[in-house]
Image (tube, rainbow, N blue to C red; front, side, top):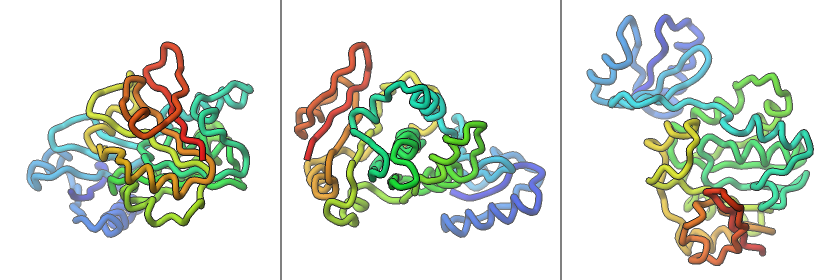
Length: 257
């Protein structure tokens, strides 16, 4: 993996690319007039591309690049502002001032919604195992500018923690978060959302073990919540009470503490 810039990068972009390369501890390659494919094939590696507007994660095989965007968070916040409900918020019982630990951050849509609900007095932390995704999402949450002020404010409050949820949970104090949340990624494409498809080739597919759930029970004060495919065996395996949603591919499971 290496870092480079967009074509015709200005001094600020180059400076940021050098900073990202140092932060991620990977080489910086000057872009020059060559294409990304040229540099990736020459290096035999994937790359992080720093542009004027955003960072992108590129595969040498030429798949669609990964970059940050709020995905479903924008229209979900608009629904909440109209007084409608959100199934994740309902399952987690989120209210203003609460703390929320997202163990599977990804594009951070659920963390953004949690941040909107818990507000400035609350706390939202998201764990992301892949350090490149974590870097891109952390930067995107701070830099993305939406016409919706409430979305910008919610994004800005989400704290990104890079590392696996196995290690991250062990570092958390007992009963330090109101809600611990899991939305595990699976090999199968269980969603029709094209917005998250590029993340699949980079995502961590770490299984939810009994040990992980026990750590989550130690950390959570109120609830452990899991979003999963309606046919997932993990609900029964780990003792989740399933909130069934008619016609939905995903259900939410809750362990009340």
